[in-house]
Structure formats: C-alpha cells, structure tokens
Length: 356
Ligand SMILES: *Cc1c(COP(=O)(O)O)cnc(C)c1O
Image 1 (cartoon, rainbow, N blue to C red):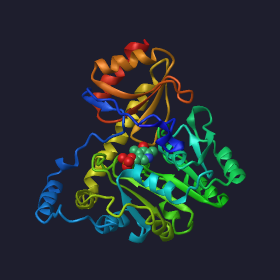
Image 2 (image 1 turned 180 degrees about the vertical axis):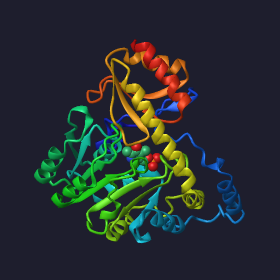
Image 3 (image 1 turned 90 degrees about the horizontal axis):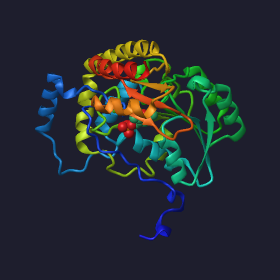
Image 4 (image 1 turned 30 degrees about the horizontal axis):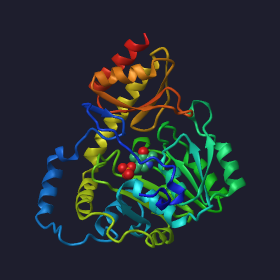
C-alpha cells in the first residue's frame, strides 16, 4: 500500500489497538460485570422471541421496535431517537452529518478520545478547554470558548470519562443558549449519576443532541447498541448518511427485551454505585494516592510513585486496570471500573502494600 493512498487527515493516526487480555478481572473498559441472561424471565423471553426470528431478512432500517422501547425509557417520542452500533457509531454519524473540513469542534479535556478522532478524520479542528485542578470542568472557560469560537459542535461528556465529573444540567443549558450551533452531550454514564440529564431539554433546544448507550449500566457492551436523542430534524438529517441496515436484527430483538427488564438490571446499577462509594472511601485513606469523586461506574486514581509497578502488581493478581502512559494530562493515573467487592478488596490490598 502506498502511504499517499491514505486520506490525508488520518496519515498520522495509529490503528486503534486493543491488547489481548489474559487477566481474569478485566476492569479497564467500564464494562458491567452482570450478565443480563442470568435473569431467568429475560432469558425465557429471548428464547421465545428466537422462535420467530428471521436472520435471512434485512433488519428494520430505523429499528422501529427498539426505537419505541428507547423512546418510552427516555420520555421522548420515537421520531426523536436514532439507534446504531454503540455510541461510537453514533458519534461518527453525528460528526459526519454536520462537520465540514476546516470546521471546529470544542471539547473539554481530558475526555473520551472518539470526538477528536472523528473530527480530525473529517478534517475538522478541535479546540480544547482544559479541566481545572482536580479534573473539574472549567465552566467559565467552556462558555467563553463557545462564545468566542462558535464551534460547529460543542461536546460535553457528562458525567465525564475518564474523570467521573458531573456538570449540572443548568450549566449545559447556559451552553445551549450561548451556542449558535450544535451542543452534543454524551450521557453514556448517566444511569450511574441519575441526575442532571439534559434529555428533558430536547423539546426546548433544537440544537441539543444527547448520546446514550446500553453498553454500560445495561450491560450490553458486546451487543453494540447506542442511540441519539434530538429534535426530529436532526434525527432526519443523520438519516442522510446512516447505513440503511446499520443495526443488526439480533440487537433489535434483544435490546427491547432487556429494556423491559430494566428494574432488575438497574438494581445491579445500584449495587455498583454503593460499591463505588465504598471503594472511594477506602482509596481516600491510602497515602500517596489521589482518587477523584465520580458519578459513574469507574474511579480515576493517581499515585505519587510506582505507577508501572502497581500496574504490574495488579496484573500479577489477575486484575487489569486502564493505565495512562505518556499522558501529560493524566500523569501517573489509572481508571478503575467498579465491579464487585472481592475484586476491589484484592485491588485495595495491592495499592496499600505498594504504597506503604
Ligand atoms: C463507553 C462510552 C461510549 C459508548 O460506548 P459504546 O459501547 O460504543 O456504546 C460513549 N461515550 C463514552 C464517554 C463512553 O465511555
């Protein structure tokens, strides 16, 4: 392959690479430990539904049944929802629908990589507003930058990955008023925060787009199901570039069944939140370690020393966390997905021993 065959905007990209995983406790990707198929009534419904499942037929282009179920769950109308292969695909669609080469997007940083990657692929520029000390968002800085640059898309990840910080909906409403263009709010972890969602603002602000996913609190990361909620005109515009059969028939069948059983699944969410608070309280006590308050299913932790050693010691205990290497923004940091007490106790033991 000749390098000049590549699209100019991606020549310097590294392929997104996920290292093979050997550890038993994989707490590096904010996955849910709970398997929804362990709910007997849910499994029964799925098996029954498979009786009439027709894999030889193309799926519904707009995932009608799933869209209805998600509309009911989010308090929107079905025409305000569009579904796809995880939040990642929805980010690609949103940016692909609205960004021209040379346009700008605004992000706060540190945050999820996919916004900047998606924008750069399209030849758009990224303006970054750095967090304040303690990885809390710079609200004034964001508002000033929105007014000054009027970016085509302003991105707010709320609660934020990887910091766990939650902004109030009232602040996002200020951004919506200040922006002449789109405001994209990624609520992938909102089920863990359970407050400050901006879904109710969609009726009032035609420039608001909200991203949700079933990958985190609903435990369907492997199924790939994400969705956007926005004004109908935005949903229709995304239809211009959406692949006609983007979301497979099995996810369209399975996800509405999962949503029907959400009471049981969200009880697991409640357990995770309790365990997160306990883990936080224990981590705070360890000298040489800083842990940041989080409204999600993960905690951001920084150590004063032994960054690589602790990562290896955790691996030796069969625990894989996300480590931030060569990162100016997140020096000596890890992101730890909260799962169950036994895993967290093993993890705490390693931190206590290494930092004592
Ligand atoms: C996990 C995540 C998503 C979406 O993940 P999908 O599995 O593609 O649905 C989106 N945004 C953030 C911030 C995430 O952490």
